[in-house]
Image: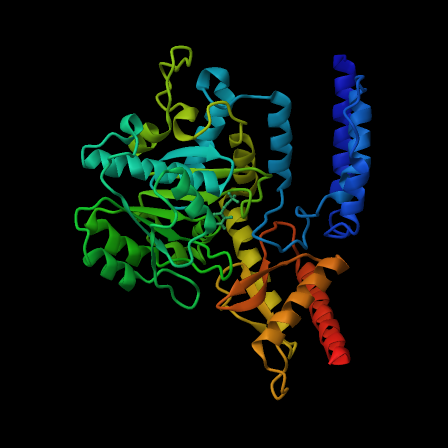
Length: 481
Ligand SMILES: *Cc1c(COP(=O)(O)O)cnc(C)c1O
């Protein structure tokens, strides 16, 4: 295998990738027959080498048809960002450079890019400039790193070295989360040895936001002096609700609790002057976890953890060995802030995303997605059979199919079935893609507008597709009953 054939393979990948990108606005969002395609791909491992360019051509032919256009403008499933052109190109460059971002001596470029990107990140999200920042795979890992830092610091304060001695015999740590905490918080608590099922869950309001009065009551009701972690959330995956962080911090701080914010996408509201009031008080927390592959539209995978107390962060994450050469003039080694040692240089794409958007472009991206979410809700509300379940304060819209007023079929189970049927029809049709959820014991469609390239026209086409699918679901039901 020669350098030349390697270059051909790269050229082929670039050509295929570019052509694919041009289909994103019009291709079916979910592939029509992906299962069939995938089945036909399976083959025993060949004995002989193949030409790299041929392998790339083969992959473009076989795998591309079974991809989902999550990077395109009409994918509204989960909370999924696309890829800003500069971020995608920078990520390709990072692959071609093949830098290991673990240590400064392995790549000054990667370390410095992370350093610059982390300062910009803290700046645009209005977080303390003195935080330590780690570049991880996503918000799940960011939550884990932050909780590990919290565990270190709270136990250190009561004279226990958790990194050295583990949790057996350690003083207990109390954990309080919102009643609508994301599943990844449970995962992080499990990995940190704090247990997912021993947490206390606070009452929440109509958008699933933690109620500070309930938090205050819990903190007052005992456990004074018990090391406590409070996990707040910015961005409820159903409603977009952002916990009242200022009020929560006012309650949590005097108690000595460690306040963590899971802000996978909601924290980005802070980058918009119009929406920053929603995350007011975020800067008072002790740690923050967020994604950049969601709302910042950096390619997968990419998340960021920030900790106000760098020494707790470093104590929880860093490892040392004689061969891990620390640069004498680089006190902040990248691997001190992440669970990994060797690591992809994710900072380049984050740098490129922020550098290409600028402060204003970022604010516009956030504002635009929220405006499009409101447009979605407005179009869908015109249909008598569609109800919007949440106040659309951010980029998330919850939609339920319900029989129109006056119809005798108001059974919630029928509305659930109609909603699920509508979701399945929208997914099959391929104009757009959205997923389902349960909210307050009701089935609902969940729309998340998080892609930089989504336009008003995409929203209108998708709203029409949803209305059409709901119409068919009703018609079928009427015929069957
Ligand atoms: C998406 C999300 C996560 C998990 O992020 P990953 O990038 O999938 O690891 C955690 N918390 C919230 C609120 C999220 O929306």
